[in-house]
Length: 202
Image (tube, rainbow, N blue to C red; front, side, top):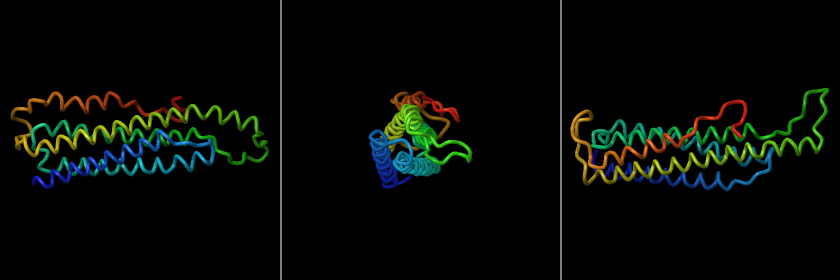
C-alpha cells in the first residue's frame, strides 16, 4: 500500500473517531420526555449509530484486503477494528432497547379503558430508569468505538516509517506488539453482552 494510501486510511479513521465522539456527546446529553418526544429524540441517534456501524465495517474490509495486512502488527489493529464493529453494534442495540422501553401513548383495544393521568405517570416513572440505563450503555459503547478508531489510525500512521512488509505467519513481531494487542482486548472485555429481550436490563 503506497504511503499516501496509508495516510488516507488513517485520516478516514480519525474522522470516523470524531463522528463517534460527536454521537457519544449527543447520546450522553439527550433530553426527552417519555412517549412521542422520546421517540423523536432517540430515533435519529439510533439511525446514526447504524450508519457508523456500516462505515466501520467498510473500513475494516478495506484494511483487511489491502497490503496493510502484511505489515507487522497489523493483526492487532484489524482485531481492534473488529471490536469497534461490536461496540458500535451494541450502541445501536442499546438505543433500540431505549426505544423499546419507551412508554407509547397509543389507544387500547376496544373495551379497555384509556389510561388516566395517574397510570400514565406511573408508566413514565417506571420507564425512565430503564431508558436512562440503555442510553448510558450506548454512550459507553460509542466512547469505546472512538478509542478503537484512534488506536488503529495511530498504528497506520506509525507503520509508514517504522514497519516493513513481512509474512503474515512468520517473522518477528514489533517490540511493542504486546502493547498493541492490549487495546482490542480491553475493548472486548469492556463490551457488555447485548440486553435480553423483551425485558430491559434496568
